[in-house]
Image 1 (tube, rainbow, N blue to C red):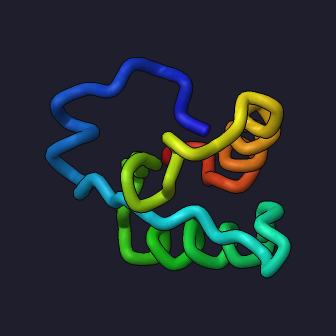
Image 2: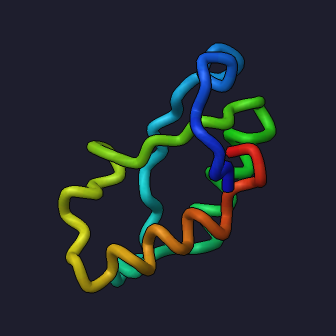
Length: 80
């Protein structure tokens, strides 16, 4: 996961993708599907992901927020 400040150059070479947050039928996080979405975006050169409205982040309970952020941080490539 990119941990340095986002620069103008970072934003100019990528679009900001707003991927959905994949879940299983029981609403738990679907790690494999989220990984597949991220890899697909990264394979197209996208390096800026913003989980928000369509990822339903505003519906994530506090009890799973940390787990969700950790999963995303683990799944993204070093420059995403």
